Length: 240
Image (cartoon, rainbow, N blue to C red; front, side):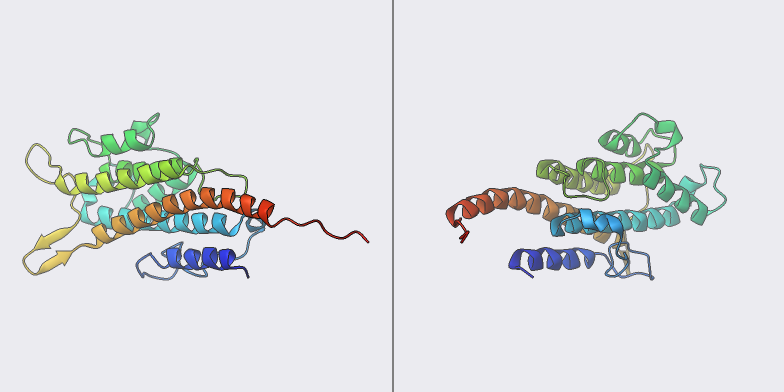
């Protein structure tokens, strides 16, 4: 295995390890959770790295979804779902099928985030927020959750997605409704109780996006260098 390929595989493993431990199958980015599939023949090592990072980011969003619904049950009760589990499953399915909340049809990525964090919004704020975060991240990857050899990603878009997630995390903890209460209960610091699991998940997502953004810039730079090296060291082969 060449040095470049080894580095890409190592990065894939490191990215998959960025997700906090949980029950088996809870994190899509965990090592060994995806078996060999036919479409992987259409992916380079770098494509696999980006795809694993995307899977890990979606897994973190699903963890946030579960935590937010647990801390804010009034939100899932705004829908016709029977319980917390059914509501969580419905949002996951909506993300996978790219179907936004019914009251927000026509809005995309940062538009959804703006509405979800608007104190005047009366819909399911958890659904709107997590779906908006997922749509923002996926949009930055050219609307793909799996990346292939012919896909061309823009590192600046991925970087901007990281900043949008960062802004959403900050607004989640700082914005209040008309009564001065948080829009959603998330991190908790009271007395001897400290629950910063939300902050950790947001931080993991931001870190992965920043790393992929940097790798995209490096990947583009290396393409030019590799081409120049091939010309520099090119030699004709003997024919007799």
